[in-house]
Amino acid sequence: MKYRTSLAALTVTALAATAQPALAEAPATIAYAQRAKGWEVVLTSGKVVKVPQALTEAPKDAVHEGARAPFLVSGDGRHLFYYRKKDGLFVQRTVHGKERVVAKSIKAYAIGEEWPVVAPDGSYVIMQTSGPGLSDFTDLRTRKTMGPPEKTDAWALLGFSPDGKRLLLSAERVVVFDRELRSRLRLKTRLSPSALAGDHTTAAVLVGKPEKYRQLRLLNLRTGRAGAVVNVKLPRGQYIDDVDFDRSDRLVVRSKTATGVAVYQVSRKTGAVQPLKKIKRPNVATWVLPGDETYERWTEKRS
Image (cartoon, rainbow, N blue to C red):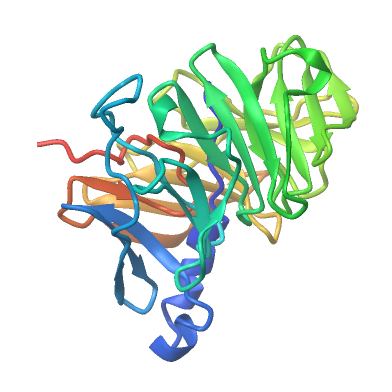
């Protein structure tokens, strides 16, 4: 299973949407990004900001010419990431801020072979590869780029903790690393966690068939003890597309709907859900929510 995205921003967006526009833009918070002819971000205030510097597709000299270029928004809705047109480098910025190169090793040439994943607060970027595996680990706080931990790239990224201080990876074992890629917890398990809680020890595990998930359980990564399977009480016809823990350490899921995406808080004990946000899809070719990976079930418009 691929890494499940952060949902914290959607809870933030739900709160920010009730604020006055002047407050929502200081600092600016992104509700979502969209691509029509070019990339643009829609703020929680409703204001649309164009991003003409961003590539929409891989250039002619790329491995996969014409492939859709990733455009990501951090889980907190404050940072945007894209490959810029002038030199193909992958950059980060706030809505009204200056571009900062994430790492010179990340280039548009490899679009379609590598996929960036961003921490909830936008302070860490990990590159997934078609290997499969992971390559560059970039800490934007220290401006340091590292190779994969423990001298192997055969890792799968499962998630970040809500505070961005821990990374959850798996290979032969599930391992919690800190930002310097030092191992903090290590567990051999047959379960496949999808999200890491704020205590850096609890993980959420989806149960069932891919794309049809309606159950989950919690796993203690220190003891290996798994909790009971909980039925998540989503509306009929909806499934769990993403699961995460938000900054308040609430268990949160996203679910694709007929008109867009819905976000729910989930009771860890009963599976009862509380709606937090419903987002209607704009009429555009490509749509990106805060915390999304390069591709989600709702990214591309289907006729």
